[in-house]
Length: 484
Image 1 (spheres, one colour):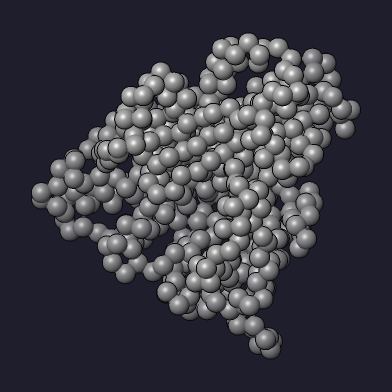
Image 2: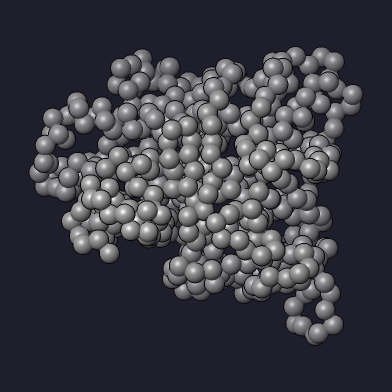
């Protein structure tokens, strides 16, 4: 059988209909016995070589890169359930309403994605704080105070003590896709407060400056994605899912949904579970299809752009992109991804829809087709581009490692079992105020270190915070302020 392109595989998968509703809610992680993965590349800076200087110290602080050739264990991932939503307005002020919600419609053919570029209002990159998410967490969780309060409002809320991880969707995506990240490392800060781990991306001032000073060519390509969102959305629900031409005169091209302002966002906060770890995750949702239904993510739509596939190299790049597309969408329970393929000059060439839960199967089918079409292929030369089960197993192991590391450090360091003084790593607040730094290096793993006072001060950045948590939230979860 000849090797099919990934586009053909994906087109075939789109024809599948009639899946039972329950199966649509399950992560498709089934693997064939002949599916294999690439073994890790050797690296002179790998943990094996680094640990020769001090093996015990290095191994204690390192969660190693996974062996991609070892069959992964199955770690269940629960279908996300929405807890609340909020909007940012044009001043990027948070409102707990759906004023920024957009509705999907298919874009016009051959749309020019460079249109409106000179009017783009781009929100500057910043420290990517967790504050807005915590405002939502505060609304949907209750503190375990030992009281017998059984009023209706309290009964509907999650017990914060049961939540293992609170983070933005982007942070969790980085963790889960790390086994297949071979170019860019990342850093994040972590705090363990009353049994809940809070994770926040770490950005230095130099990194923020660099992100805001991107080259014009890269800036233009970034804009293409936002312009695609404008062509694909409207601010009111429509009975028509497709763009309809209008006879009314307009200074804008057909289908244009409005000039791009990245201050404006609609975000969803969901609860989910990886293994026995409960999560609260927040992230932006591009739009919904049809009428928005509270309490479900069934109508959520993710919008993406990619270069048109012109050959094997583009095909391989897109297949790798699908890993991030997949986890970004599944983490928020987004069932549909619409990809706009474009030319290098920014002209929309075609669009294609993907069912999120079917993407791993598509990738697996593509690898199997490649093996059948190559008479010389063996399990070692033809493999999956990525395996979501490996990602889930590594992510679960990483988060378990973090919590175990924090607990072990507390037991090993007597100063952390007592009230620390003003020069402690926690800034004189409490053990809970300790901030940890995770550094991920591709093909090596993730290393965790406890920050000293000066490093914590850099994280605080002169703001009213305890570690990276805003003071108001810290006081509330530690019972030092009145509950409101």
